[in-house]
Length: 256
Image (tube, rainbow, N blue to C red; front, side, top):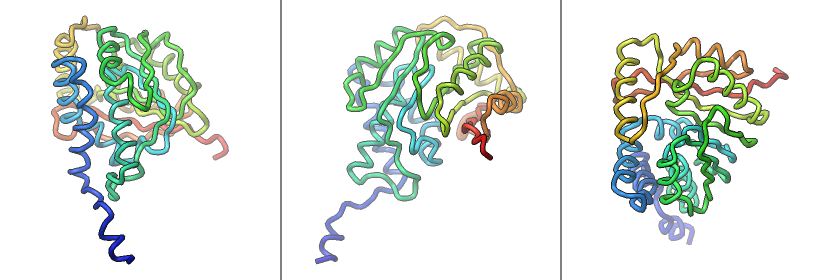
């Protein structure tokens, strides 16, 4: 009987298969927002190593209340929903850390067109993502366990960067985490390439190209440590010519 029961259970997919399934599920809703939204979602999720990297490392695991600053069309929310579904259906690879099981998602985005695409595509997901069209420098940050800021903080000046990160620290709980991807200004060639591509993508999305303010990874890390974070720098440019680094910043336990 035990043998028959075991044989009837679905096999857990290998990581490659699991990632392809997550990619398909997370990008499918964007068909409702038009060809651009769908193709952008598929390209971004398929080519940017940060999304799969966060899953393979467990960076998103155990974080229930998520704030996504500079969320664009909400791709992270759609991926979180796909992860919840995969885990519930026994499709989560055993080689990866526990699946993210976010129960609350707030996306903050400056561009109304991106917010409209997000609402049209994934506004009705079971996760019930909430999208706020606002400037990240002034947007209210709800209490949360995880803040994700990918490739947008360089659009505001150094003083505004520091002020926003201080508010992020206040919004995070005692064991909160910040995932901040930045370009390493010390890596001159990769940083220049990433800045050029960033400008092109911004224009293609129909937005004005603002000036940028970069820092070295050492400078970013020093800023975060000064706010009470323990920081780990993870290279996040695999398969690309960029100089991107994911800073995994955990609220420092003052008791230690």
